[in-house]
Amino acid sequence: MLLGGYFVLESIRVLLVTGGGIPLGDLIPSDQSEALVRDGVYSMTRNLMLFGYLLALSGGGLLTSSFSTAFISPLLYTALWTAWIKGREEPALERRFGDEYHRYKEETPFLVPRLFPRRR
Image (cartoon, rainbow, N blue to C red):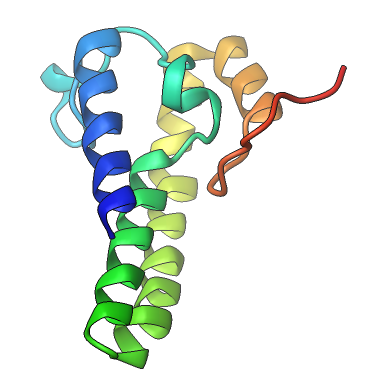
């Protein structure tokens, strides 16, 4: 649960500091990131915040011995957010950042972080 919270907070911090925007900036155009953030935690996964939420939710469920919170809720949450990301967020990023975002998608996993560098 703590690791998930760390991932959420760190992903927000990096978006603010490096990208100059906030999460879900596509809802508030004036708060969109000015740059595509690919470094640091975002070099491991494109959706670290979602991954962090899933860890925190599962951890909370395990701590409270709630099967549905630990296992079922994360599956539903993942399905809903994946639909949002694939349907709205990624197309917007493709329009804004073009080839740079396409390369990032090819090199970086969607959700589960890559812990070790890719072999070339």
